[in-house]
Amino acid sequence: MALLTSTECISRYGAAYKESNMVLWDVPTELEIGVIPKRIYCNKDMLIPLTLALKALIATGYVKELKTWDGCFNIRQKRGARSMSLHSWGVAVDLNSSDNQFGKTYEQLKKIGKNPFTDGFLQCFRSAGFDCGGDWVKNPDRMHFQLRK
Ligand SMILES: [Zn+2]
Image 1 (cartoon, rainbow, N blue to C red):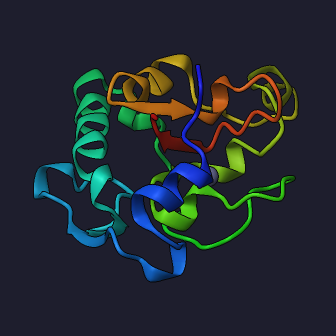
Image 2: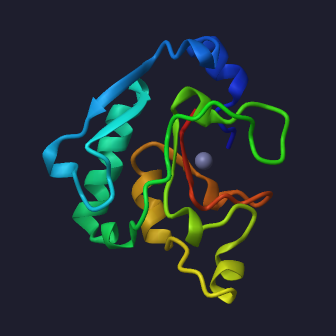
Image 3: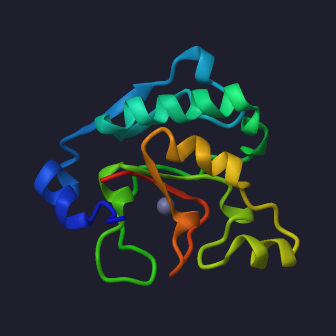
C-alpha cells in the first residue's frame, strides 16, 4: 500500500512554507478529550479524518491510551531521510511520543518498559482514513498517524 509522499503534498498544497491549506481548527467540545488541544493548526483535509478518529477512540474506549499530543504542523525533514516530513503540510499527528519511540516495534517498546499503542487504538485511526507509522516494517514510527493517500 503506497503512502502519501512529500512530492504529492507539494503538488496538492504547494511549498510547505506557504501554509496554503492550513486552518486553525476549533475542536468541537465533544472531542475535547484529555490532551487534545482546544485548537489545532492542521491541514483542512485532516478535519474529517481526525474527527472520525477521535470519535472512534471515544466510542471504543481506546481514548484511555491517549496521554500526550505531540504535534501536527511542523516544517522539517523526515527522520532518517532526505525528504520533507508530512508534518510540514499538517497532514500528520504525533501522539504519546515517549511511549512510542521512533524505530522501535511494539515488542521492543514493551521490553524497555514502555506502553506502546495497542492495535485497537491504531485501528481507530486506520478506519478513519489514516496510515499508522506503527504498521511500517522498516522504520516503525508508532507515535505517527498520517493522512492516507
Ligand atoms: Zn510524525
